[in-house]
Length: 441
Image (cartoon, rainbow, N blue to C red; front, side, top):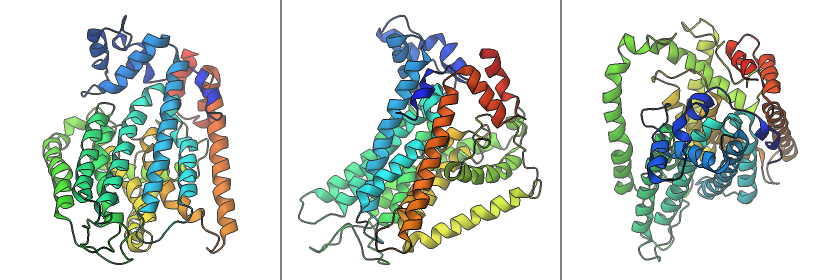
């Protein structure tokens, strides 16, 4: 709250105008049902209308008018709620790690959530009003993953609990369907929930089923492959594999047409090459951010036109391949770290591959950044018996301090339109994107 508070007094920015300020649909005259339904269906941002997010803007307007302060405060409270869910999810994942027990799991979960809430790359999901769409969608993603992990732990729990096995499976099925549907009403990124659940299953639970012995537990022996549970496999075939195949069959014919990309200054090929560099940049911007990197406007980004144009394209592809190899190598040795890497990479599949979206947005890492912290924080927040605990703790404390300071400084700049314009101009002097901010201020 203290870090973000100075930024609440700032104004609207960029896409806030077509979605909120200039959108009379989210400015209803009363709270009647027809007015609220019209507000929910008024978003110009997507064909799916994102009704939950639009409805929340309308409720803000009915309560406090077109005042960005209260809309940003709502975003901040939502961010804090998501941080609490990140803490609970981290704790559940730590307790489900098949390779090791985490004696300080609660503390590590708190550190993951604290770091995630303070990451500078997540600032736009809080102070950029319209990106409530992103944070609200991920509220349902986090709830769904919490339910899925709880259901799987119940399925693999003691035999003595009557009905716990099927009850756990039903909880898993509900947790990856209902929250996905609700999240889609806020933003389409919630469609990734079943994929995240699949990655958790693959890394931690191995599609296993309850062993019919009194000694059964949710923690299999390291290196042991439990018997596969056909219900779990069937669930993911039904909710992930089949919809993915149908979606690709529907999208690909249009994506392969040149006219689909005519309005962009990149093709599918140059987009894929560019995104390799961008995803690597996201890693650096999350863990070791600099003000010049987190500049909000990235329209001065140089598009990759070949593997060596620029040379960092090939280097980024090699690095991503190495990261995938590391993930596979860690799967048995450090499943939680492998899961974190896979969640980060999996999050990029929707916005960083073949869809003709804008190339770069920092808020796309709202969930992906959780994956990176899940991978590194448990390794740094080690127990007293681990090697070199003091340097690791110092490094983690240093990262937390850097994240907090940069987020606080950026939030302070966002607290005034003129200071924001000056800050954005200093961060990205070659970008024309900050000129509208000067005009607004």
